[in-house]
Image 1 (tube, rainbow, N blue to C red):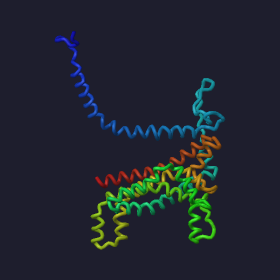
Image 2 (image 1 turned 120 degrees about the horizontal axis):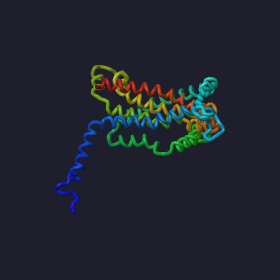
Image 3 (image 1 turned 180 degrees about the horizontal axis):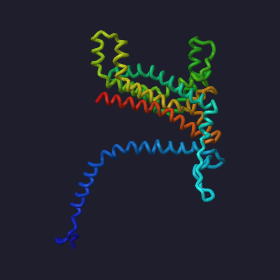
Image 4 (image 1 turned 120 degrees about the vertical axis):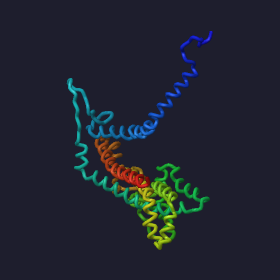
Length: 321
């Protein structure tokens, strides 16, 4: 018995599959681009907006001795819908100068560390970009290699280097440069050293990419027209690599603001950064609403440079077009 007779009106499976393929091709042609554009927004919604809204919701709650340790914003009591929004957590941040000092010090550490990474990273990126092709990959590997080890192990290694009887002090004593050990560990200087060392590759790589894309015929034209090398560097090379500088600065500045491990292990009692405040509020005080308010304010502070960076990228793209 055959499945399809001569008088059967059903289409053979091969023809049905062909129609399905045609319909799918038409759908991809009409909606494929929209789907591709929607994927980054979906990713942003799931991994940024949704966690942010959860944290923002907790910041409007009140502390409670419960699991989780905060009250519900919406509850049903006595046949009535009760909505309680607590703005006292944000007012608490304004009343206590500790939080303002923590934000200020975090921004200061991040800004100074970003500047130091730029001053160190630009010459490094220049050296890598202008090295021989045979050694360029080796130099790039040396830049990336520290990132292959655990971040925590690297910070602990700096504790061994900077402590009073550590490698640095013993070396300086052996050279006769100092008569007694320098107190570096558990100071703000140690925090700067740790942040610059940890985030330096994030500055080097974007600048290196910008230097590799640089049209050096413009540099030669500037020199041929009589401009000095220093003037050529600041008037031609730096503006043309500004995109890499800004991208590297964002990659260093944004995570440095919320850094916790480095100030906790290398810093002292004066190293009051917002990451340490968040940890204390979440785990020591178990005051999740205040901690969430601290996180929301920190995120709002970080959104401003991100928006500025995107505006710069859009202007650059329009200029290239």
